[in-house]
Amino acid sequence: MSISQKKPVTTRTITMTAVLTAIIFIMTFVPRIPIPLGYAHLGDAVIFMTVLFAGRRDAAIAASVGSALSDLIGGFPIWIIPTVLIKWVMIEIVFRMSHPERGTVKIPSVRTFWAFLVSAAWMAVSYTAAGAVLYGSMAASTAMIPGLIGEGVINMVVAVAVGTVLQRYHISKVIHNEE
Image 1: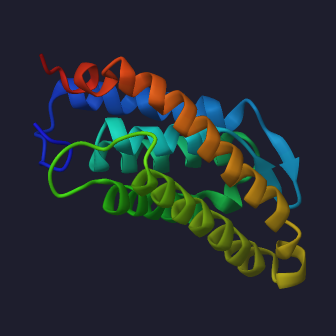
Image 2: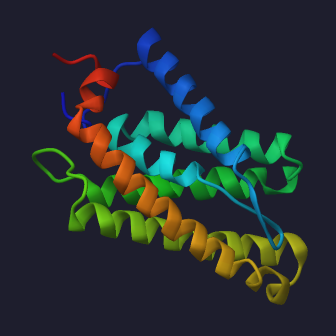
């Protein structure tokens, strides 16, 4: 089954989505690096890989819920709604840009690089705009830009490095229970 085909909701997909949600939460919550108005983390690297290996629906749920839980538990509840929307769109960007009509997604590839780059740029621009709305100051939210750009670049590098290893060992077949 290709990743772009709709999968039925099964106990296995629910469980896998829950595990991915937990991994995204942990990688977003634990390695927090303070930046103005928030923090940088490695959760987006997992989000990038999740959409490549687990599929769009499961990745969108895991990314949105895992990241929102980190905001809630980490003391940033004001960011929950923007985070859910931003992470959902990040998944859509990576899915639509990285998945060829036929065949499989290759890591590393130019297609995947551009998907990660556009998704990371969306994240940086969206969090900056959300910060301007939430705090009533574009000047304050622009202070986040260097940290968000750094976060995006680091998450892209980690996603490509780890994703390449996981793809070499056929992790998507394990996730999808394929022979």
